[in-house]
Length: 395
Image 1: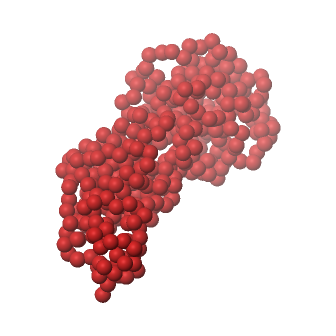
Image 2 (image 1 turned 120 degrees about the vertical axis):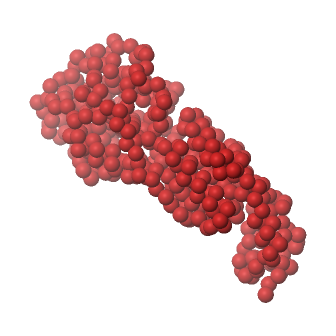
Image 3 (image 1 turned 180 degrees about the vertical axis):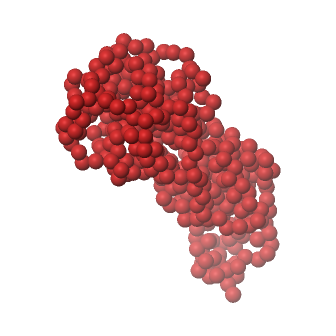
């Protein structure tokens, strides 16, 4: 039977280095750790009980990894961190918050040194390096999110794909056939934020299946978004969309709702508004908006419970996926599609503020002909030009 000296020789390291990798008493580089673990696997070496005992000692500290990045939604960021810390504290654990850009190195440093007992990953991207290397941490690891590469990490999230499909079905059932999708901040698409992409792709795919025509907004940025222009361009489409689906944050959505109301549109009588994958609770809104929200408290409770159970019961959870059914909060901003909606004099089908991608193969000219005979909305568009976007929030 292979011994620790055989492992050291195969890995090209000292016996003490192998011991440190097994015990976690000292930090060892990921490169060296990988060589040692590979040698252990190839030789079938079984560590002695003392090394296993040292590895099993608990410090009652959990690492929460949530790297800071440009354009992050501070409200969501804070909500998840606070709920995670609260749930950990309730379970008798302190937290170590890891926010640096070298996230994998940071996690390996605190896990290999046995400083923490487990790892919780927040703000997970579609292809997240933290998840890809989860097996190297040698500690239980749970991600709130569903990346593609989750074989070695447990994942818990809202079913955003189901949210996307259900949102399309909900609007279609209310008679809406042309809707606008107000995108999240462009930086979230660029960094491939998992929840943003899952909803976006599922919503567009389901809309295409059922014949719901979707026009996407152009790139959205908090610093430059022009709500007046966005709404004005929407109103001159032929015929104008009867519903707005928003992935944007509360600031962008508030500006847009105010612009719609200032243009003379009533919500939901003239236009329905649905916010998806957001967290509007307790936020001051110009007008309450129905929502399929994030649920930080619920998600963090389940994730922390799973992590603590794995730590204390020595249960393997790698690869487990738990998807929570999306929750719908009705705040009165959805209604049946209005009839006889019109367009401006230009009969513009797709304006400069919107992505020209559509969910069907119908050409703009064909769509305009199919909807001929509808009434014009020139008074609404004109009212927008002189409106004031300022206003007190409504309860």
